[in-house]
Length: 470
Ligand code: TRP
Image 1 (tube, rainbow, N blue to C red):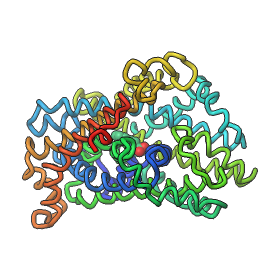
Image 2: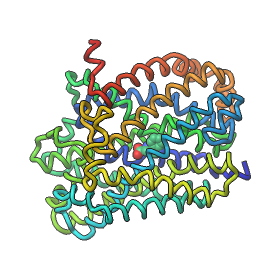
Image 3: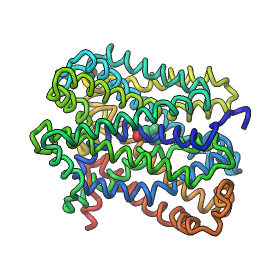
Image 4: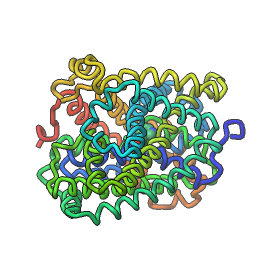
């Protein structure tokens, strides 16, 4: 352990892993997915999936990481199953692709912070001009990548954990302050209703069921070994089950609160009508500046700047976790020094992100054409960035399904249980054990495989399998 470093305490790990989980996925993506998936029906499916399908995957990932003290590729080798290294490699690759486009969106959020500080509320109507200004958004993305690299370079306890210890509490305070503000605005109640009262007719939409699972995996940072990597820095005395529970609850809690903030703001802005067609990636970037403008010149600037700063903070602890995966892979497996690994990986990932950067306006090819032959036409995806996003969603679900199969049938449940017992001595006699075993042996492999098919058809062909079956 000493050579690789590690988290200084259980709390340090929980904050870092929750920092990985809480990000653009919670604050930017969750609200518009809720909008597209039909409101409260989506929220319910999402909660169900987080606890029933995702929690077991999270425990498995952390246990494999802590057992082997390795990156996702090295972990399978260390357990003696070199054939399964492909799963780790798929994870590393997914992490690289996710970070490549995630960093672009994080750059937008960061740029919006400065626009708000300047009081430029009209940026909401100029979102497409903003994203097409490639020098500007490229610079923001570059700064964001550099900040991420800087933190990862400092190592696990001195960089990752330290950043999370400061950023996570700050974020929680900021978001709670915004919720209190949002729900006291006129018409806020209409937003709350849309968010919390389910419309059951929406439950069979592929975007409700499949979308809720995609969102759950992405938001919890699962399926690509980010938590194998973070788990590899966890102490043997820490309780994996309770850590995973805290991480899940924090992530779900913050997503839930983000919705509670967003829909009242939207309702305030529209005079109470929630127009779900208006949602989509623009929900935050297009709608919110107008909301802040309506709040008034001084408070609008304060709240608006505050919001986009919060979003940038949330994104930063996530980009750090995404970069840590390929970096730890290169450090462990190729004996590259950490600093050099960070520099090389950051440059490669930034370069892979260029098509995403160009795909919101400046390049006709990447904005409108590239994705078409790959099902973009039928599934309504034209931007390269959105297409890359959809590819990685599939990779995460596949990774999640396979890792439960691996743990249950290849590595074997008794080895998993042995690892969990370290730090949780009564595990073998607790009710958690049979429930978890049932989930990883049957429920997760079957449900994740089925929903993987639902998501592939929805993402790339615009076909709703669930409606066809019912
Ligand atoms: N969970 C983060 C978010 O919600 C994004 C993220 C960070 C992620 N690390 C990940 C997603 C690993 C999938 C896998 O914004």
